[in-house]
Image (tube, rainbow, N blue to C red):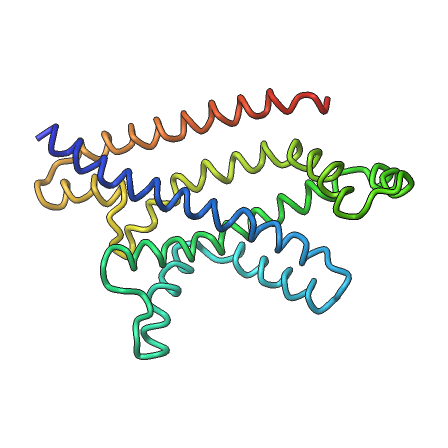
Length: 218
């Protein structure tokens, strides 16, 4: 039984890891775009992005996931997501990417605005272009400022992947819960927790290493 549970949990872990990686791939650049939008000189764009971020951050991720997965089928009388596992994972990644992009945008904005304006002005005096100022001055210092809050959000993402279970995506928590439902066993749930702890522990060590490497800004 132990080996069967372990195999099942590793299968769920692969899905969890897939959701985690794909969410970061899409949410990080989208979050940066939203951050620029929220600081735009154009009021319409700035207000639109700020309202979007407010709505997404102010409503539960589970609710957003349910709406994104079931909504199109009810509104269009046609489910845009296939009924198989791939469709459920795709819907999960879309919901997670939008949600985390909004959170990341606030972090990115804080990091950008935290860079002293005088340093950007100094870059202009030296004849640097706006792109050079951003990539050589603003971006490097922004990274240092956003790593701690970003690490917290990314670790939270690991645990939030369990919400995919609500639309029957076979992720790690779903795998552990299935044994309680079918065989009345609770120990697989505790065993599932071990997988999450190891995952989060590895990320914690990674971010600690990154923060130490970025100490050159002190």
